[in-house]
Image (cartoon, rainbow, N blue to C red; front, side):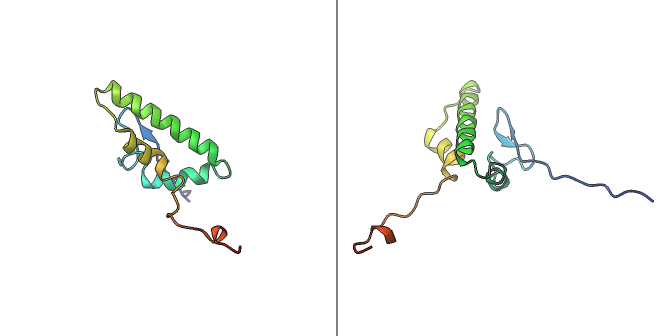
Amino acid sequence: MPRARVVMPRRHLPMRPAWLCRVCAAQWPCPAARLDLPVEFHGHSVALAFYLAAAMRDAMDDTYRLGGRPDRATMHARFLGWLFPTRPAGPSATDRPGR
């Protein structure tokens, strides 16, 4: 009787120097990587931030090497902006008087 083949999902990793996902060809970190990375780094959010900051630096260096000029704000939003979303402005429950 033939054995069932187990197919492992491919990890969504960057392809350099274009910094596109090797699986889905979206800009890396792609939506799937944005779901996978916090799970992979569970409990180590500072390490994840350092990993993504280093990846952003490498992506910027690769862009320069390819003759481009990376937009720093766009790169920050792409690599780090999704990691710790900002809270909307306004007082929180702990900021209100009498609490």
